[in-house]
Length: 213
Picture 1 (cartoon, rainbow, N blue to C red):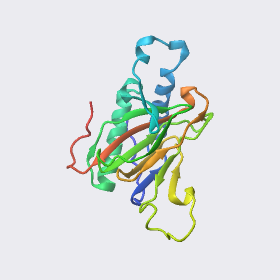
Picture 2 (cartoon, one colour):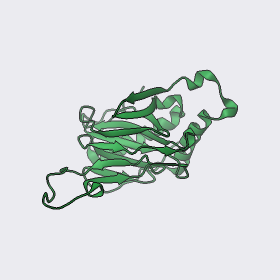
Picture 3 (cartoon, one colour):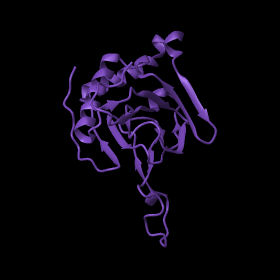
């Protein structure tokens, strides 16, 4: 399976690339997710793969290795395309193997950064555009924070951060030093309606192969 790598102009410190993967690949990855929760095929063992991450006041979400849910061949193509994009756009050839995050009703992440994990963070969304939930947007504090703008002027939340929807097949790449958050998910507890993202990091150490398991 192969695809054509989309090229988008880089506007530091955040890039948003819609339709990142060939549509058939993105759809098949999403189908893998939905098959995992198919009640007609429910067995105990395949579902004992989730880590529940909860820190009071900081974050609540579910986490797993993506190959537990998504076909490994499809993940490998995703990684190849992402690495090619990273080398071409950022000159960074090291792409960490991602984790798969699920946010259902009540899940969120408070403002934080990932400066210790890489140079850039990637968040690739497999969230359905027809979900029965609200929230799940990334809130990214604008570069310079509160102090490079006009301190004498009144400001409110929308002027302090950018909001990025978890659109299906959307890749977001951002400077790991930038603080960001994930809005609280409200509504359906059905995993199919949750916020689904692949999350990892990019770094500049050479152009070696993707770090994969």
